[in-house]
Image 1 (tube, one colour):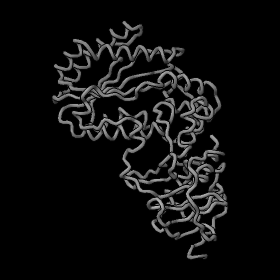
Image 2 (cartoon, one colour; image 1 turned 180 degrees about the horizontal axis):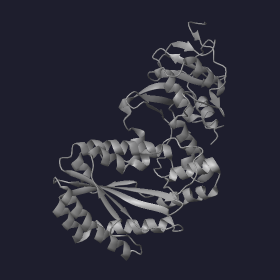
Image 3 (cartoon, one colour; image 1 turned 120 degrees about the horizontal axis):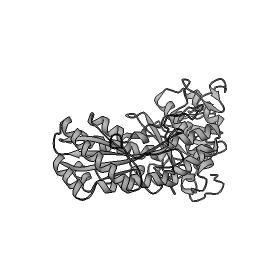
Image 4 (cartoon, helix red, strand yellow; image 1 turned 90 degrees about the vertical axis):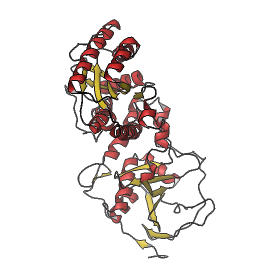
Length: 429
């Protein structure tokens, strides 16, 4: 020991490593899969999208990158870093935004006293159809049926006071692109199954005729499907596309089943098949600029939902649930990004904090990255690169740093001035 610091000897790197990525309990963490997928998209598919390429790779000016953890959700994420906010191109931002939207809607649905039911709207599609063309028919047809005298009559008969619309698209080798629209209808009446069936019948015929007028085709029988279920189920299904991205198998092969755009990107990263790359690009540019979710006018007020833009959710979200568990020096964060190990550092820091990953194992991982770490008296990890001094912590500007309680290696800590956050030299994309 030196200066009251405990020395932890790192473990040798062995069978718990595969291709430089540690495996705990035999499973690569979902977070690492998402960060890997983001890198596939930004470095191999959408290289020209600069905002995407910088997402979660640069710190907010004048702020140090931190890692926060929620005991409630068991999740951790970076804080004080720039995010692109792309719901269509970034699996990480998409996940953040979708989860927040689902939670706010689920809470509102729980308190709704009338009926909530969901309609799925789709148009016929074939292999070879361009996504932008099929999407245009669907969007125009939805605008047509949810307006005018017909829709006013529907609203009056069934007590509908508003709707939440969510866009989704999948692809299959058998049928090509399948864009569709999920709509949650809110009625102030308590509707029976007979009422729901009657609603479906009226809307089916109208939607089919509207699709035909816009140059497409939709069967009166399968073009519109209205379903009911628990309020929780309807909220989760409405947002399932953004939520169902789990760790994707690196051995996944294309089949006749429907896959999401993020799965297409993952399959390109796994196989190198250029078809999947071009399909993802087609999807991204077809939907870029479109809304993922929209509420009818006045519905958020009735539901008691605060009107927040996506960037507000990314900036705040449900931060009151999170506690800070680590701080990274500017140089350490550069190292993590350049080694493509952002997801891994989240897993290591959260695991060592809650005790699922031994401190000695965490120390080995830090060393493998060329990093070192100290633990402060309040339990927060300070992570820095080899050759740096441990990062200085301030309660407020100019305050005295916290004392160090633990050192990963036998070194006397040296207090340094905060780094120049405006210096971006040497930062690699």
